[in-house]
Length: 385
Image 1 (cartoon, helix red, strand yellow):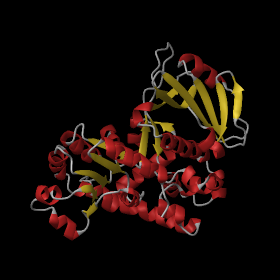
Image 2 (cartoon, one colour):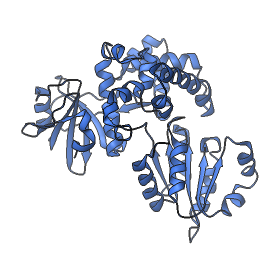
Image 3 (cartoon, one colour):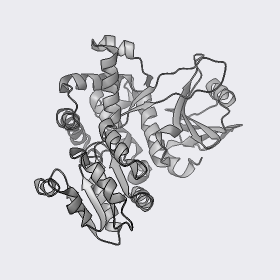
C-alpha cells in the first residue's frame, strides 16, 4: 500500500474544518485505500460502511438517521453515489452540537452527485478530487513509466506494460458498461467509447462542437452532453480559457485533455515507450501528463487554472492565478527550452509575474527576464510559485 502522505494530511486538515469531506474520483483511483490511510491516522473510533455491500446497504435502508446518529468519531461511507438520498440525513447529523462525528464519503464523481450533495450540504461539505499517483509518490526516476502507464494504482503496479494495458482496457470497458449506467446515465456503451476514443485523438486541442458533431454524426447538443458526462466523471478535463482585457481577439472554447495518460494511451493503442515517442500525439500526451502532475502537486482548484491562446497564435499552456499574482507555465517536450515570441507576448498581454517553462531536459534556472526553466525530473523541488 503506497503511503500517499500528502493526500492523507490534506484530508485530515479538511476534516478539521468541515463536518463532511467527499473524496471524488473514478473507480480504482485509490479512494478506498486513501480512506483507510486516513482512518489509520485517526485517534478516535472509525466506522466504515460500504454501500456496495448488501449488509451495510440494508443497515441504512430503513432508518439511516438512527444508524448513523448512534456512531461517534469518523464515519466512512464508500460508494455514496448509490444512495444520494443520504445527503439530507448527513446535513441533519452534521448540524448537531457538539459534533460527535465527522463524515468521510467516497464516490465516483458525477454532475448529479455533486449537485445533490451541494444542495443538501451547502457550507458543510468539501470536495476533494483524487487524481492518480503523483511523480513525488512513485519517484522521478520512473517518470517515463508514470507517463506511459498513467496514475491508476493497478496499472502502475502491474508486472509489465502488457499487464498494465490489459488492466486499462478492462477499466475503460467496465467504466462504460457499469459505472456510467450506475450514475443514472443512459448512453450506449459503444457510442460513448467511440466518442471517448475520438477525444483521445483530440487531446490537447481546443474544443469544436460543430466539427465533433459532424464527425460523430449527431447534434452539437449530444456531443456536448457526452463531453460534460466524461468531465463530470473526472476522466476528462475541460481547461477553460483565460480572458485578458487586451485588444487581441482570444479563443473562448476550452481545451480538452484526458486526465489520465494511461487511459489516453490505451484508447490510442499505444502500449510501450517506442510507440509513444513516435506517435503523432506524443507532444500533446506529454503536455497533458505534466499539466495534471502540476495541478495535482500544487493542489490547484479548477477556478485557478486556465490556458491562454490569442488568434495571433500566441499561447500559454497553463495560467495559474493566486491572489493578484498570475503565473504562466509552458509545457515542452524538448531538452533545450528557450524564450519564445509567445512567452514575451503573454508576459505583456496577461501581466504575468513570470513564465515557467517545464521541459524534458536537465536544466533548471533563468532563461531571461521573468522567465525560468524547470526540468520535469525536478518538478518536486524546483517548481515553486
